[in-house]
Length: 253
Length: 253
DNA sequence: ACCTGAACACCGTTCAAGT
DNA sequence: ACCTGAACACCGTTCAAGT
Image (tube, rainbow over all chains, first blue to last red; front, side):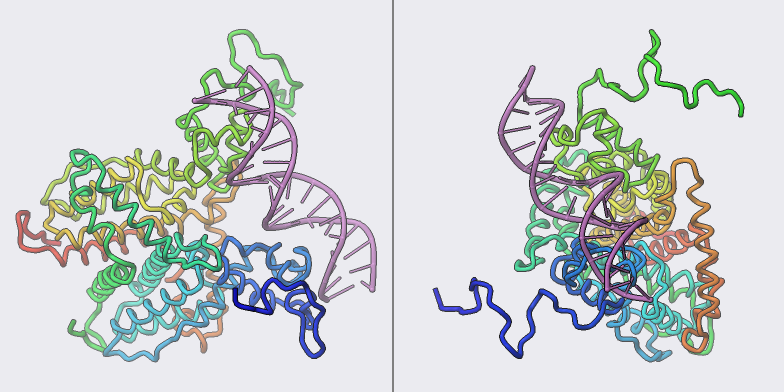
C-alpha cells in the first residue's frame, strides 16, 4: 500500500495558518447566498434527494432551524438552486437569419446545464420560472422567435412547450443516474439498466405486443443526444410553420 | 346547529348486518391487488405525496412492514398504480386514413386519465413503461404510426417524445392542484396562482425583460387544453413530415 | 435581528420473532 | 408463507428561548 499521509490518519489539530475543513468553517455569517451555494455542492455530489434542510444545515455546521431565517422552505431552496444553475446558460444575441439554429443551440445548452447538475431538472418541471436568470432565458427565447417572425401568440405557447420538452428530457436522462454514490460513475448504472430493459422487451409475447417486440432494439437504442435532437427538430419545424411573411423573412432548412 | 346523528357521536359497536367502516375491514388477505387499489383511493383523495407505505398500511389496518411481502418498495407501488391507471385509457383500432387524428385523440385520452388521478403523472415522467397496460398504450401508438406510414426509426423516437410531452403537460397542470385537502376544489388554488403570476410578470422591469413584460397576458392566459392542443399539433405535424410514400399514403391537413 | 435546541409529527426499510 | 412489533436512521417545520 503506498504511503498516503492524508488517508485514514487520526484526527489532527488544525495547523497554524490553515483553516479546519468542515467543523466551524463559518467566519462569514449565514446568508441565502451561502446556503444556496452549499446546497449546490450537496446536489452535485449526491443528487437532489440529498439536498434536505437538515443535510445543508449540517454542512454549514448548524441546525436545520437556522436556515428558515433566509429561505422560506425546502421548495424555495430548490427553486433558488435552479435559478442559480440557469445563470450558467449562455444567451446568444438574436440573429434573425439564424433564429431556428439559435433556438436549438439554446435548448442544447439548457439541457447541458440541467444534466450537469444531477437530477436538478426535476425541480424545473414542477415550477413556473420566476427567478431572474430563468426569466432571462425565457426572454431570450421570446426575442429569438420574435426576431424570426413567429407570431406573439405562437411564441408564448412555444416557450411553454419547449421548456416542457427540455425539462422532461433532462429528467428522463438523469433520473436513473441520480442515486449513485459520489465515487461511482453515474452513467454506468444507466447503461446497465438500458441493457436489462432491452432483454425484457425482447422477451415480451409478440402476439400481444408485435410492434414493441419487433422494434425492441430501436426503442432502447438511441442515446440521449439523438432523441433530444429529433424531438427538438420536430418542435422547431412546427413552430416555424407558423412564421408569417414579416421583417426577417423565412429561412431555408 | 342541525341535529346530525352521525356527526361527533361517541364510538358505537357495529350493528348486526353492517360491516365496520375502517377497523379490521379485512376478511380478504393482503394482496398486491388490494394494496394497489387502496393506494389509488389515497391518491385520488389526497395526492401522490400522501401515498406512503405507512399511510397505505394504516388504511389496511396493518403495519408498514406487511406491505413488503407483496411490493418491493414505494417506487414499485407507485409504478403499479400508474399501470393500473393506464388500463383506463381507451385504445382505438388503427384506421390508416385517420392516423394523425387517432394519435391526437389517444394523447388527449392519456392526459385526461393522468390528470384525473391528481399528480400521478409525476410517476410516469421518471420511469420507463414496463407494465402490461402501459406497454399496451405504447404498442397502440406504434401501430397507429406504422399504419400511417411513419418509418420505424421515427416512430420509435416519436413514442418517447410524445410520452414526455403528455407526461410533462399533465405534471404542469396538476402540480399546483396536488396539495389541497380532500374537501376543497383543487382548481381554485391553481387559478389564484395564475392571477398572482400575471401580476408578477406585469411588475417586471420592462427594459430588462421587454418581451415578457409586453406578453405577460399571453404567457399566462392559455388554459391547459389549448396549450396541450398546440404542442400536440406541432409534434404530429413534425412526425407526419417524415411519412414516406407507402401503403397508407399521405393525409391532407 | 439572527440563531439555536428541542420537540412534534412524520418518513422508508429491515429484521428477528411469531403464527 | 405470511404477517407483525419494534427499531434504525432519517425527514420538514415550528417555537420558545437565547444572544
